[in-house]
Each structure stands twice: as C-alpha cells, then as structure tokens.
Image (cartoon, rainbow, N blue to C red; front, top):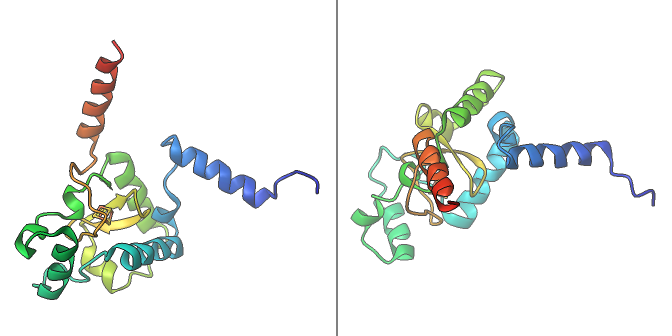
Amino acid sequence: MSGLLEPSVKIEIEIQSQEKKGEACPVATGDVSVNLENRQKGIDKANYGPMNPNEPNAGYWREVSKVWRNSPDQAKKSRCGNCAAFIQTTKMMDCIESGLATGDSEMDAWEVIEAGDLGYCEIWDFKCAAKRTCTAWVTGGPITDDSEMANSMGEDNGND
Ligand code: SF4
C-alpha cells in the first residue's frame, strides 16, 4: 500500500474541509443527485414532509405530533422555517441560487412545490422548504445573517 490517497478522495476531503470552514457551497446545493439522496434520508429517517405543505395533510401532522407527543395543531408550528438547522444566510442562498442556475433542471414534484421557499438543512444536508418539517426539528431557527452575527458577538463577549 502506497499510503497515498486517490485524487478523488483528496478532492472530497478538501471539499468537506472547505464546507466546514464555510468557504465552499455544500455539494448538495449544486448536485441534484446528492440533494435527492440526502433528502431521501430525511424522508426515511425523520419523515421529512409533507410533500405538498399547501394541503391539509391531516394524516402527516398526526404522525409527527405522535412522535413529539403534542397535538397536530402544535406540531404544525414546528417547521423547517423556524428550525435551528435551517440555513438562510445570504451566502447559502447564493449557493442555492447558483446551483439552480447551473443545470438543476431536473426539478421533481417536491421541488416545484418548494420553489421560492428554500433553505439548506444542515442536519440532512439538502435543500429543504420552510413550510415542511421533520422529526429532527430543533427549536431556535432559522440561521440567518442576523442570527449568525448575534451568535458571533455573543461568542466574542464570552471570551472577555
Ligand atoms: S432538521 Fe430542521 S431544517 Fe432539516 S429537514 Fe428537519 S425540520 Fe427541516
């Protein structure tokens, strides 16, 4: 064994490192197949949905409320749009926009519905819609330029 990494492995490590440092766009914002794969994980593992949030989806909200042990009406208040994993910073929205502009033409039914309502889920690593949810929902979102700024100021103060 040479101990040297394959070039493709090196590139992947570099991309992941840049993503962690916030220097690169997440792969899923520019790669439809990665986005679909990751979205499917969110659906399978955490019931990401409902497919069309503009419909009543009584059965869906009942299922989610059972997991959270609350009522369907309460469950409906916990959506990607106010989840702590939902990123809508200017930088992330630029990544999503440039991904859509460069060949993300294979929009499926889910994406047609969610167009204009997107952010990036940092738990499942895919473009998700503000009106949907999943059982991994975390209070305290979304992540915006303002909330990032407030957090960094809080961290600065904490170091004094
Ligand atoms: S973790 Fe949050 S942002 Fe991600 S799919 Fe679930 S509710 Fe949406």
